[in-house]
Length: 254
Image (cartoon, rainbow, N blue to C red; front, side, top):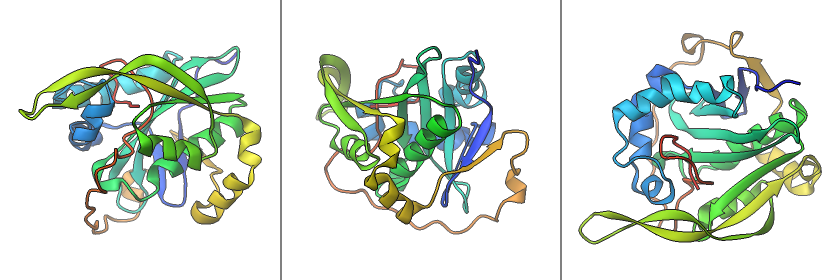
C-alpha cells in the first residue's frame, strides 16, 4: 500500500501549486507575519526568516516523504508571486482520508485564490489519489474560511466545542490566546459532481493538469514577471487566512 503522495505540481488557469523552494523564504516570512495569520493560526509570532527557511527547505518536504501528507506552495502562474500555501495533513492511508489547511497572503485575498487552490487539491486527491474524504476545520468566528468551505461544496458536519485556540490582540499590541469552537467540514468525491462544482468550473476552469516534480517547467521557462496590481484590505471581517489547526512549527491555519 502506498503511504506517500507523489511529488507533483498542480496547475489551474491562474495558479501553480508546487513544492516550496528556497526562493520562497522571504515571501513566506512576510505572509506568515500578517496580523490575520497571527490571529487565526498557531505558528510562531514573530515568524522569523529562520522559521520560513526551515519550512521551505526541509519541513514542508518532510511532510510528504514521511507520509504525513503534502504541502504545496501556491503561486500565480504569470508572476510567480507566492499566493499562499495548501497543506494536506493527518493522512490516514488505510481509510484514504486527510485534512486540508491553508493560508492566503494578504495581498491575494478577495481574488478567489483560496477556493481555487483548495478545490484543485481536492480534485487531484479524489481523482488521482483515490481518496474518499477531505476534512476541513474552521474557527467559529473565521467567517471568511467558512465561506470558502461553502463555496467549494463542503458539508458542515458539526461543532467541536472549545477545541482550539486563536489569538486576540490587546490595545498595547500584545497577543493572548483565547479558546474557540471548531466547525468541521467535509468533502467526498460525489460532492464534486454537484452543480456548485460545475459552476465553479465555468469561472476558474478545470483542474486536471498534474505534473511530476521532475517534469515540470523551471521558473526560467515560464512567462516573465509581470507588474502586480496593488490589493487593499477587504474590510473588518476576518480574511481567508484559513482552515484548521497545526502545531506551532507549521505555517497552516484555521
